[in-house]
Image (cartoon, rainbow, N blue to C red):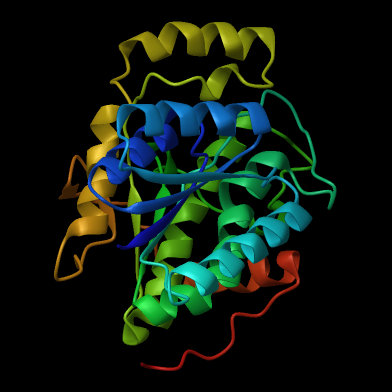
Length: 286
């Protein structure tokens, strides 16, 4: 049985990915922010399928110490139950903000959760991904187009615009995937970004101001059910041989921003390593 880790697994898109992959016979390890939501997700998935394998870990991935903690818990589980192998890591957890807010490290929250959390978690789980020649999948957005990385002020401290911060974090997702492929494709690891499109979830209603909350409440009514994008994540987990593309929408490759270059990916990789206090190191082909 292949094991998949999914962040943001207790609600929205992540919950539907978890439900679908568990139904398809994967061993799903979810990560959610609250104990109550994690237990609710477990009950929903297991009650609908007595044979499902789903366990949800609690961690606030906004904070790097929490990323490290849950990664160690997952690695311990993988070593004890899965021969140390991880078939896929789905970095799905994300947030929207209305104003400038920071983490314990002083990092802007959208940049921290939407990008750095997945960057650090992938690093921690890399040995298990290497062993399984696994896949890393990010939840992206079409909004990554038409934006550049603000290299001189990546946290946008001087002139904060929450929409700019969100768009930049989504560009970071695809640059990270590009950087992973450039470094680890030779070791059998492949990275992808899924554009879920407009989806009816509560992402814009969590810890946002009244205006953003109101606008998102109206806009999400036009979104598809999370069950629709969940199929693309399942497609990327199941396909053999491993798909060659980078950016997917409705199970098909899609064009992406011209900003997605090796130069920008390398620059983001170096910056993210410094912000997380890690170094991915040299890849060893398997």
